[in-house]
Figure 1 (cartoon, rainbow, N blue to C red):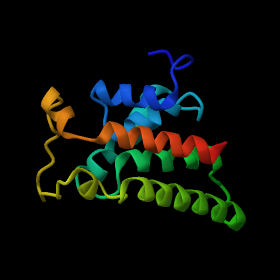
Figure 2 (cartoon, rainbow, N blue to C red; figure 1 turned 120 degrees about the vertical axis):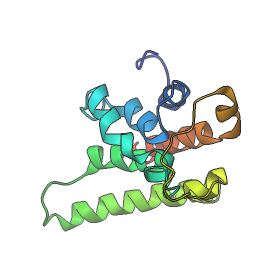
Figure 3 (tube, one colour; figure 1 turned 30 degrees about the vertical axis):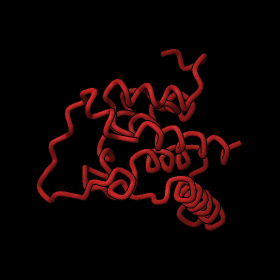
Length: 151
């Protein structure tokens, strides 16, 4: 897919369809814009699939949007209280908008699958897997909401 011609939501959904996790799909769609190589973006976001390591916590797509927000609006000075506040406000706004649209920010609520302690095996990416997961929609929502908030 060409990053220059496809919209980011479509691009991110396409990455998910290629087998990347939800967080990777979002971060990879913004990689060039936030100064990361594709490899760095994929590695950075890789632990956050399945709601953080398949624990079904915060949605990976939403987490990816937080990562991108941090790269775009983050701070480096630990005493930059105004910058921290602005970033935290942005993260909270993204989370609330996502919650309003989807009913929750938790993977387990969104896909109806609880955390099974000790089960770290990723789901095989088959057509049945994709048919049973609404994740592509959450990826699209996270990207669109982030673009709206950044513009």
